[in-house]
Image 1 (cartoon, rainbow, N blue to C red):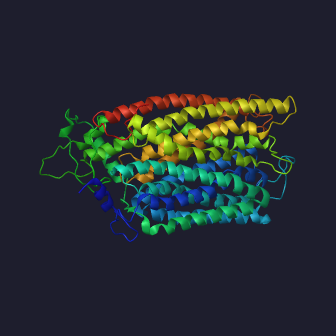
Image 2 (spheres, rainbow, N blue to C red; image 1 turned 90 degrees about the vertical axis):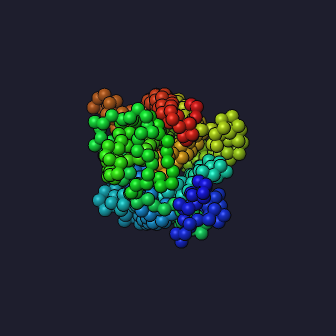
Image 3 (cartoon, one colour; image 1 turned 45 degrees about the horizontal axis):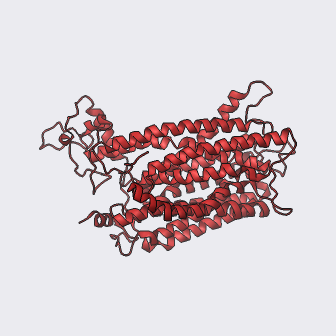
Length: 573
């Protein structure tokens, strides 16, 4: 029986029967998941990307507090992704996790729409730009707002990693043609993401601006409903992976066994270590992993010290495969950490850059103004053309040069994106200096089109980094943990947005040099703040982060290659 047939035996159809490769899975099944992804991101992006405007104008929170509310909301979405990934891999499976939490997200959208529609659930109307005494939302009104917001965060967080994993589960990595299609699926997933973002940032933001936030939130609810319908429509075509019960037990067993045997000396010949045998809750029931000499202190978990006829407890003796899975997870940590600053930059494009646009000339004609929140649509207008071209032309060409199924290997792709993100902040800093000087010194208001380069550059960098990270994590060796590993990629967004909140607070505190000064970002007025200096700080952090990534990516490749030349990620940086 080959690996392709074995993979099919491990997956089941909607009735729990072994899936049939001629009926289940493949790109046809993945299209239904891509439909959900486009509609879900359409709904959540319309809320998240214009949320700061709603929080300031309707709920009357000050700028710095409003920015932190947005970044904390987005960060919490991605923290909840860990919960979604765990529940999927251990108990529910990706399909049912999406269904359950999809309805949680839908209820949050509906509650937001109700609050935005009813005046008694909001503070009295007031223009915070003119009247500095506007009443801030407190008590019951604030409770309803945050309840709705975090229902959306819980639902979206648990749905996101499972959308990617469930779509990728429709392909088998052990089948050559399916492996290539898996790489194309990740690009298609980013295309669906870009389409959803583009529609959200243009049509839905326009609806929010001209018909009110209540209608806008209602449209988000409708989009989520369409996404769930798309998923359910593909039920009979899906191949579903069985949940593995506790996905952390084998990891814990390795750690405990290594600690208990910490005083033992690892054998010089790794073939003397305990071989691969199935154990309780084994995450990889159908494959073995070759030994690698990294993190050798964990090898002690494989040393058999009792008589061969006596069975040791799985908490005292583990297999090489178990240990190698833990090594793989540890090796992902520096790659994961390298994307945190990248996502801190993304946080600025969804907060301060939107406020930048609000202070510029948004007039396109006498009767049409560009909503500042729609600025983030700029890169997606380009990406809906660039992503298909990348997959159709650049990937086949790159395959001939690199011999890699993905064309550009995932680690290289991540590095390209991290490098480009630095120039996004350089562009943002130069533009903010020009905008501020024009407004303060010359009394001129720049056109909003000046802000385009920083969004375009980051859009291209995100296409490389985000897709590369998802593909790299999914193709790692910890089978049965795909959804959880996808959740880790989203957790990078979370840490990036949380770090943004901390960085804003720290920068304000350090740069508050007198009683009258509130710091670079504390004046609630961009003409008085020094957002340009904050952007330069982020550009420096981004460059240092890229140099750190070069070191860790090379280490990852070197440590994976030692005794295993076929490890995913075997690539040149």
